[in-house]
Length: 177
Image (cartoon, rainbow, N blue to C red; front, side, top):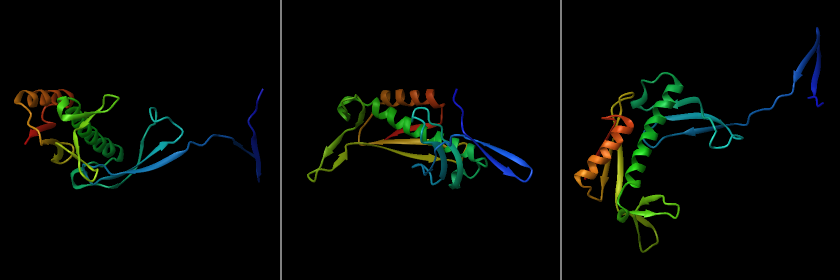
């Protein structure tokens, strides 16, 4: 039988037992999303695998004008993270469903926007997806503007329909210029 060591201290009125316990390795990360100027500090356990890791809001150090209506820090984090995830998913969905002639395909099948190599070796995308948000939380909407390629009306309608199904009608608008 194994026993854990117990440290016994004597105070004026008798022994105080302090039991051994393991400390979680808490890490702090400051996050500033690319779609607003909010700044959020969250904690996470560095011993947990990335697949099971839980992020917990510690503080909101800056609120942008579009997210000032959120008073609870957890709600604030969830709103900002939800907008960021919706944007990232929608842009990735556009890229992954674009015809092969317009994307580069990695060996694992992942698609990225097709690029051309410049004389200096740098790469330039052949088309782009820009994003902008409108409104104030909790009623913000996302507009994705695709430029450099022309989608057919059918492609645009199918894309809009898939995004409406996933996020709700009116949450994301796709424009092709």
